[in-house]
Image (cartoon, rainbow, N blue to C red; front, side, top):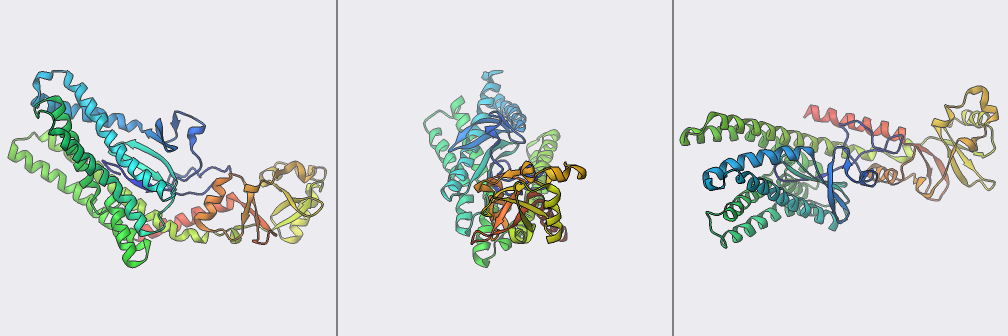
Length: 427
C-alpha cells in the first residue's frame, strides 16, 4: 500500500521452463520462494530480513532512500524542537525512521496473519518506497473475508497509535522520548486514516470492494467501484495536497521549496494510487477470463507408444491419428513417461528411425498427472505445484485424455491478459 502497507493478490501462469513468464505486465504468481535458492535476495524483492510463519520479509532498496529522506526531514524538525541535540538529532531521526517502518511491518503482519488464518498463501512481505505490501497469492472467496483481510491492517495502525499515545503520558513532552513517541503516534494515525480511504489499492478500497461485492453478489462490480474511487483519490491527492501546502505556506510564511517538494511527493503518491487502481481492475478482468483456461480444451491429442518405438514410427502414428503428443506406455498400456516436444526437434530427420522414444521421454511423476476437469486458477495452481513442460491429462476415471503443454497454457493466458487489457482501455 502506499505510504503504509497493502495486501495484494497475485497469480500467473507457468512458462515452458516451469517458471512464470517474464512479461512484466503479467501478475506475479506463486512459483515458489526464491529464498531457497538465494537466502539473501529475490528478484524484485530486495534484501531478506527474516521470516514470519514461513513468509519471507524483504526490504527493497528504495526503502533506504525513504529512510534517508525521513532522517533528513525529521532531523530538521528536531533542530527546532530540541536544538541542544546538535548533530545527534540525525541519529534520533534515523531511529524514528526505523521505528516507523517497524510499525508499517506490524501493519503488514496483520494482513499476513489474517490471510494465513483464511488459508490464503502469502508469497512475501516487502517494505518499500512509501510503505509496504503483503503479496497474497489467492483472492478471498467471500466478501466477509475480503473485508476482514483489509480491515486488520489499519486497525493495527490505530492500535499502535493508541499505544504510543499512552506511552506519551508517561514521559515529558520536551524530551527525546516524548518527541519520538509523539511522532510515532501521529505517523501511525496518518497511516490508519490514509488506509481507510475507500479506493483501491488502499485497504479502504478493498473494504469498499467487499461491501459492493456483498450487495451486488459480484466481485467484479466491487472492484470496478473501488478502482474508480481510487482514481478519484489519486486526482484529489495530486491537486489537493499541493494546494493545502501552498495555502499553509502563505498563512505561515513557509518556503516555496517546501511547497515544491510537497507537490513532487504528491505527484508520486497520486501516480502510485492511479496505477494500483488500474492494476486491480486489470487483474479482476483477467480473473473473469481465467475460467476459459480449461485443461480439456487446451490438451493436445496424444497416441500411446512403447518405449522401444523408433521416433519416426511414433511420429507417423501421431500424424495418422491427427495427434500432437506422444505418451510412453508399458506392456499393460499404463503411461510411464511423456515424450518431450523440445527433445523431438533436436533429432535430425535422418536419425529418427534409429532413436527410440524412451531416450526422449520424461518419467511420469504423480504431480504430472492433471485432471481434464481443471480450469482457471485451479489449473494454474496445479501446474505451479509441479513445474514441467508437459503434463498427462486424464479423465476422472483415470483414462488418458491427452498431453497438456505449458507453452499452450501460457499462450492462452497471454491471450486472456490481452483481452483484459483491451477491456481496461475501453474503460
